[in-house]
Image (cartoon, rainbow, N blue to C red; front, side, top):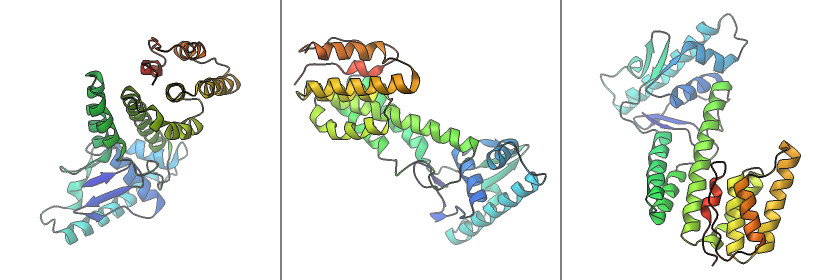
Length: 276
C-alpha cells in the first residue's frame, strides 16, 4: 500500500485508489494512514470523528466505516491481482483498535524524514551543497497543504501541525545551506513570500535580513527587523530574540564580517558570514 499525505490524501493498493469520497470514512482512513503499521485505538478514532460528543452509536458507526474501507480495499485487491490477500489482512482488527498495514509500500512522510535527516547530517558535516540538494529533495515531496482535502478533527489537526513543523525545519535548514553557499540574491524573492506568510517566524526573518544585507540592501534589512519587532510586540508583547537583536545591531553598524553566534532560541544567527 502506498500512502501520500503531504498534500491531498492518496492511498493506493496495487496502484488503485481506495480513498472514499464520503467525509467520515475518508477521515478514518487519513488517521489510519498517518499511523500506518501502528495500532490506532478505537477511542482515538472516535475522538477524531466526534471530539468530546460522540453519539451512543459511535462504535457501531465506526465499524460501518471500517467495513466500507475494507470493501474498497477488497475491490482493489481483486482488480490488482492480490490473490490470497484479504482486506482484513490489510486493515487489521486488533484488541482495542485497528491497524493499516503497508506491507512494504511507500509512505511519503517517512521518506520526508529520511531525506531531511540526510540533509541535516550533511549540514553537520559542513557539506552545504549536499545539504541543500537533499533538503530540496525532501521538500519536493510536498504537493500542497497536508491532507487539505480531509475533514480534520483534533487528532489529524495535531498530526498536520507536526508535519508542517517538519517542513518548516527542513526549509529553514535548506535556506541556511543556500546562504552558506553565497546564494543570498537568489533567495530574496522566496524569503519575501515566506516572511509575509509567517510574520512572527524569527529564523526566517533573520535569514531575510542576512540575504538583504549581503545583497547591499542594508536599509531594507533593518526595516525587516523593525516590522518583525512591531508584530511581535503587538501580537505577543515580546521583543525579538537576543540573537536576532545582535544581528540587527551588527547590520546597523554595517559590520563587514559579522561574527555572531546563535543562541538556542534562534538558529538564524548561525547564518552569518562574509558580505558579498
